[in-house]
Length: 101
Image 1 (cartoon, helix red, strand yellow):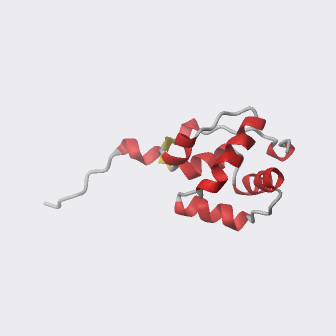
Image 2 (tube, rainbow, N blue to C red; image 1 turned 90 degrees about the vertical axis):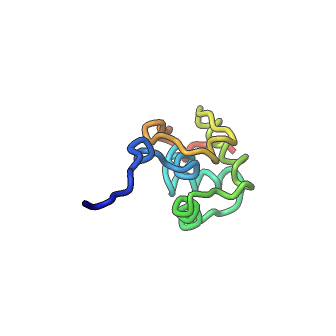
């Protein structure tokens, strides 16, 4: 008889706070563009992709991202960057390029 690890099915549909925030803001490219517009600095898509892959967004970007979400009519808070989320919680605005500075 083989011994198997138990798999928690509830955890299978979870995503990290970083993935949640990036998806909520419209994905890698839209998040990078919105940050560039908000902060006046260029955040390459590869940088945002790195955050997504490492499941961490550096704290200095949290406030601008919260402001971007607010301008898009969405609510984000600090907890959203830290805790895991159900994948089905993610919804995003379709036009983040129109974020006001």
